[in-house]
Image (cartoon, helix red, strand yellow):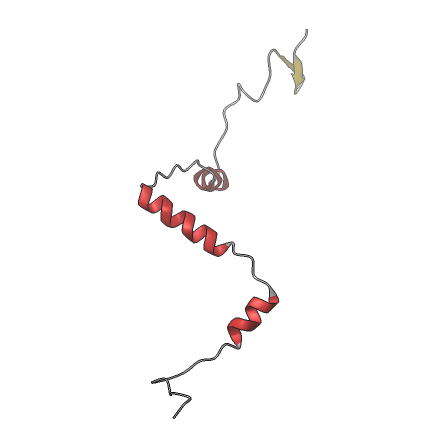
Length: 83
């Protein structure tokens, strides 16, 4: 006999493909979250996404960050330095 032996009973073509499987809760959750999602954007939405992506991936240096934090801020009307 060329098949595998389980519990002293020879079985021909024993493989996991032929056996029924029970799908558990984790399998259902995993298959739900790992399903393929296809999103189609309009040209305006695509442009917005590209602009947002470019903004989020701007390279900042410590000098840029320091200059932003310590910039001059004025409240109310600007005063003339000549007066």
